[in-house]
Length: 107
Length: 160
View 1 (cartoon, each protein chain N blue to C red):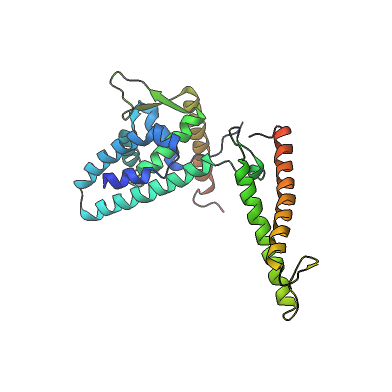
View 2: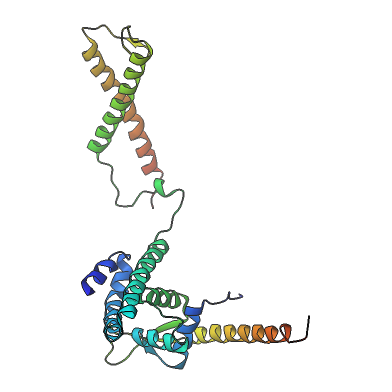
């Protein structure tokens, strides 16, 4: 089944979790840092996205020793990683296409 | 502000609150502490963003939680029971409304003449008694129909 393009916040959340498991606040800060301050998520938006990603099975709770209900970490699942790689491949293709089509001197 | 944030979390569905509320409050507190170190403009932006974020999130969560179906109004919960008193009172109210509409319509149509209910002309002395008897009769008819429908639905096993 073909996956539709991910929204930028979702893509950034997945990228953030691709590196290592993170808690909610850590995801917020990482997304802001990766987008150079362009994408700043609110807690409502972040947890809405996390809930959808959990339902799709792209991320999962990461059990830690000191993990409690109000401080849970999330990590990417193999399925989520495949989706992310698919999206990166799609973006690479688009970038390549854009480079070719916007080459100077071509009409 | 944290108390207000907790209040806003009540806009989410109960399952969502149970699953994420504590975590969201913790993240909000951390973000709020970071925002306190910034200038006023950024702090105001932070609160506005959080306010709209939580309202939007609650709206989305409620929409996801609500599965609308055109047949929803005919669905009956398994624990649903019609009380006979409720049926009787509702039928009486319905009959009263129908009769009143009919009565007023007749008065409006024939201002000088004897008021009627339906096809019946009522003598002035016994008008009230007849009105009550007619009301009771109509109530019984509507009640029987209503009870028959409910019984049929139950027998058909119409459940959620």
